[in-house]
Length: 307
Image 1 (cartoon, rainbow, N blue to C red):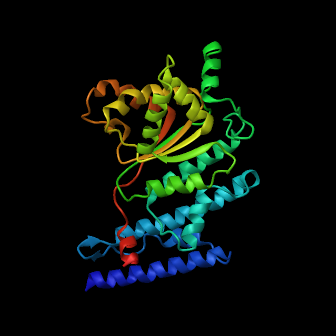
Image 2 (cartoon, helix red, strand yellow; image 1 turned 30 degrees about the horizontal axis):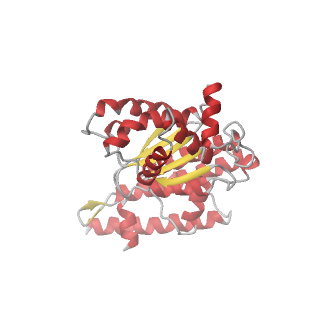
Image 3 (tube, rainbow, N blue to C red; image 1 turned 45 degrees about the vertical axis):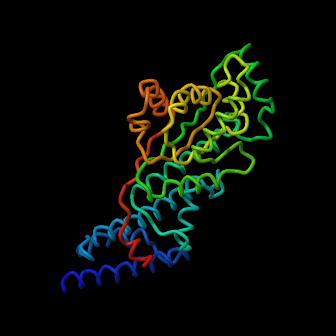
C-alpha cells in the first residue's frame, strides 16, 4: 500500500513538472527554478519489483538540466549560430513529444555533440568543410601532388567516439547531430560495415599504385571531410590490418570522425587474429577523438509511458 501511495505521488508530481515545462515553452514560468526546488522531494517506490522513484528522479533532473543548458546556450551562441545545433533540436523534439527524455549520459553526450557542432562552424574554413570552396582535385591527382609536397593537415577539431549498450540512443543522437549540419558541407553518414566494403572496393581499383590505401584515403577525404560511422565494430582480420594506416591517412588529410559503437575502444577486435597489429589503431582513435560513454540502463519511466 505504501508503494502504491508513493507511486501515486510520483505520477502526480511528474504531471506537475510536465505542465510546468509546457508553460515554460510559452515563457510563463521558470521551469528550471521549480524543478531545482522540488526535484528530490518524493519517496522511492517499487513497481513490478523495480525501483521507480530513482528512475523518475533521474528523468526530472534531465528536464531541469536540459532547460537550463539550452537557455544558457541560446544566450551565449545565438548571435553566431542563429540558435541552431543538435542540443536545441533535441530539446524541441522533447517539447513536442517526438522524443522522450533520457538520462544524464544522454545529456552529456548531446552537449558534447553541440560543442563539436560549434567548433566545426567556427573552423569551417580551416577544416575546408564547404564543398563549393574546397579543392575539386581528384583523389589520384591529390595523391600525386602529396608525393611532391608531403604535408600534414590534421583538423583543428577533434571528433567523437560514442559507445555504450544497445538501445541507449547513440545512433539517434549522431543522426540528430548530422542532420543539423549545413547541406553544403562535405559530410557523410554511413554504416561502418558499408564503409569498409567501399574501402576494399576502392583498393581493388587502385592496386596498381605504390600505396593504394593513401589514394583511397585521399578520395574519401575529398568527398567527405566529416565522416559519421555508425556501429563501429571490427570482426574481420582484413579490416583490422588496414584500419590504422587508413585512418592515419584520413586524419592526416583533415578528416573529422564521429562514430558510434557498442564497444569501448580497448575492446575493439578483442580476441581477434593478429590483434597486436590492430592495437596502434586504438591509440590513434583515442588521440584524435573524444570518448563518451553511454549508460547501459534505460529509464523505467520510459517503458511505463510507452505502455
